[in-house]
Image 1 (cartoon, one colour):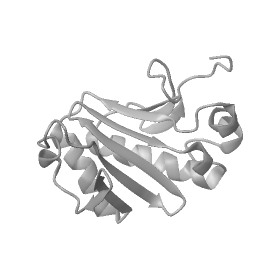
Image 2 (cartoon, rainbow, N blue to C red; image 1 turned 180 degrees about the vertical axis):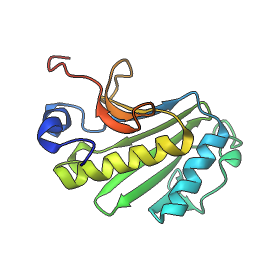
Image 3 (tube, one colour; image 1 turned 120 degrees about the horizontal axis):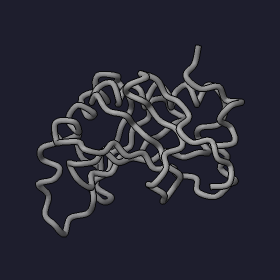
Image 4 (cartoon, rainbow, N blue to C red; image 1 turned 60 degrees about the vertical axis):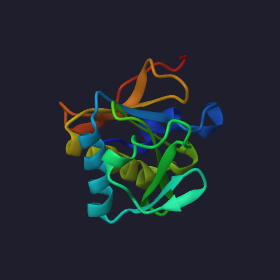
Length: 161
């Protein structure tokens, strides 16, 4: 049985309702957690592209990413768990794994299953919950991987924000 049923979460993932790039934050992380995510990407064979600005580079170790000069562009890592779904990680700080996904790519049961598997894989690897927030709002997560329940679940049920 899937973690989430499309008919139960479609209203939360409607891209016509405003923000289309929900933010995913895993707080209280370390460079070791980032490295665990990088290793996970490679181990799962997910397609990826690491870039600093517009320059595509080989995937570095997590320990070398924060060592960039202060005026350097923020590195990003695009990960495709399947060809139609992309997560964009931003290496802003060791203390938080930060990425977003496009709601346009998360329509239907098959894509929700991909999202759930992706969030769960990250959460299980780092041993932390992986909450997803409406774009630009980090106060109230609306769904995410719950490490204690070991599944992705709806975390917010209000329809009026």
